[in-house]
Image (cartoon, rainbow, N blue to C red; front, side, top):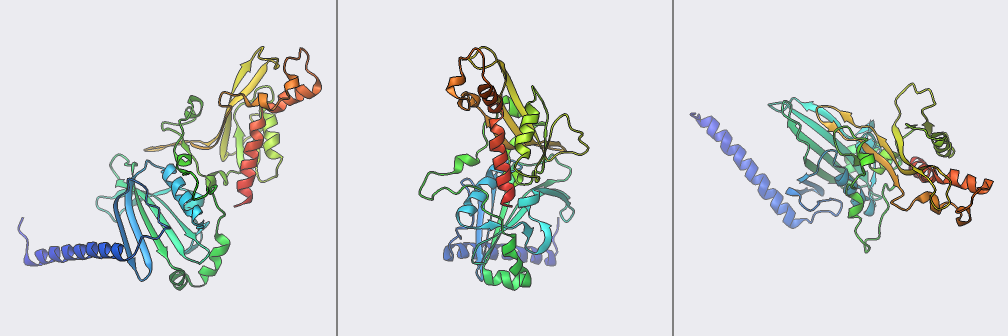
Length: 366
């Protein structure tokens, strides 16, 4: 293919711009250290950092399968420890929910040829000095191709307080009221790493069965905070009713429904449990006892498998929790007195109190 002189000049100009930009990034990285607000995990590729007039930008790519739960957990933890607090809304668009609230979105990008499909996540954080931090995450692949959801592209941007105010005007005064509380427990910086808390657990077969074609993923705390209605799928010996009573007790913000209720609309989450029939075991009464419980949001089957999101998981881990909740004097009795019978009834739903505490605590701190 022959090139005209004007075409060759255009290629040279574009090459020159790209080379200059690359040199600018390297120079900026040497002159200005990467702000501690930026989270750059091990294994990040194509890391670029540039700084101009106090505004820092970092970008990279990392292997993290959609919906990048472990990455987002580590990112949130990193920022929490450095006193950055997420914003419920987009700083530039009042009323538009942050991805910390609404989660992932996706759209077709017709500006690319061929057209691509993009899965996007974006949120902003603010510190007490008024600096503003933005993180944008995306997966992108050709619209007609099989979804590529393993390579995550990350872009971070820090605006110093004076720049944020100049760009946002009076909107900057509204941001403190939109700051969310810390979302994760903060470990002392001198203590052990919190990394393992963000890794995906080896789910039991019981939990894995709740998925629709993809391994379940651990949800993040802000997702748990959005739960307002819970359906309990099963009932054995009145268990669902006792669980519902415990979960509904803290306040009207949470509505728990059982299989006996008329359900006219989908719930935010589902609670299911695995029970086991115990017979002639150490003096405990015969009956059904909870061994595992999982609160989850159902997965969605699209062109790709949207995995079930595990909001809360409880297991007796081989040491039945119901035994530790019952006075030792109750074991071995041929005939249970009223107090021991009540203790055993309450023990099989002890996990529900912990679930209620977790839910109401997060909802109260929104």
